[in-house]
Each structure stands twice: as C-alpha cells, then as structure tokens.
Image (cartoon, rainbow, N blue to C red):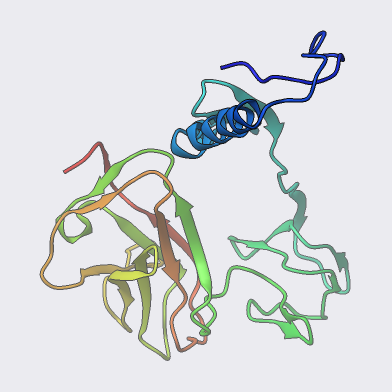
Length: 244
C-alpha cells in the first residue's frame, strides 16, 4: 500500500489533515514489510568468479558477468652481465656465468678477487645457483588450470650441473602445505656421462596420481643440509592436463 503523508511535498499533495491511528499503523506496516523483504531476499553479492592472464595482463571476471582490468602485472627485469669478473659491481637480478654455469645475483655487491658459488655476506648468499640448506622455497608454481601428476612423478627430471660431494640432500615436494614427495641427490648416484647428476623422485607412500586444481601450489623446498658443491639445479615436472 502507498504511504500516506499529512503535508504536501516531493511525495505529492498529502492528506492535508492529521493521520488517523490506522493510517499511521499502515505506514509503519508498509515500511516494515519492505524491510523484511530485503532481509529475507538480499540481493546476490558480486564476487570474483575467476582470473584470466594473458602475457603480463591480468583480468578479473566477476560473477555478474562484468570484468575489471586488464591490469599490468609487475615483472622483474634481468640484466645479462656476462662472464663473472673479479672486483666488479653487480646488482640484484644480474645474470652471470662462470666455468659454464649460470648464476643469478641475489643482491647488490662488489665481487671478491676469486669466484665462489657459495659466496655470502651479511645480506646472505650472493648467487642463486648454490643449493642452500635452510628448507627455503626453491621453486613454486601456481596452477592456472587443472593438471595431474602421474604415479611416482613419472617422466619428471631433476638435474644438478655440479653434483653433491659431501652431503646427501633431499628436496621436499609439496602440494600447497602437504608433503607429496622428495627429490633425492645422493653422493655417487646417477652421474651423467658429460657431467652433472640426475636426481631421484620419491613419492610419499602409497604412490598415486595427484590432482592439482586451479590456484593449487606446487612447491619444491631446499634441503635441511647444504652440500659443499651442489649447484645449478634444474627441475622439469611432467604432468597431464585435466582431472583424474
């Protein structure tokens, strides 16, 4: 029912007299009914449905069909600095080579008179190639679509250009925060004829296919001990798209 007003205004001419108690109650009832209807039938909230990434552009797709973006994702700029030089100034994200290995500079510094892959100072390790022994994150992939890791990490490969020589190391593999396996490098095992060492993938028992959905994280952690020579790690994880 429409509200009844006494005076004229934006709502119209009004009644021109005092409202009766029944008319006043009718106004209150009308407003209360409208409020109750909103409480019992709230409008659907607009939320994020999914994200779309094309190159370095991020678009947010909402549940009402609208979009936000695209937004430009920040990206690190690497600088090729060539062969390592003694007493040279290097900056974070410089890429250098030494004796056939490639290294990423972790922070600004002036190099020493002689090269050491595990060189460090008060800021930490200078180069990213050595394998630290602090269980830090070495690699993390965030799934943009569903995929499946095969039983026993079949066809996945891990390689060290410079093999372990003083410590056996084990790199934990996680799905989000859950342990799903390890990559093991043991002294003298799996040497490559032209140099380097292959790692062994070990599943958490019992071995099974592992499903990853969009936004799940695949993470490889550093070992809990550091080997004197292990460096220049590369990992290729084999998977198939889809669901189990």
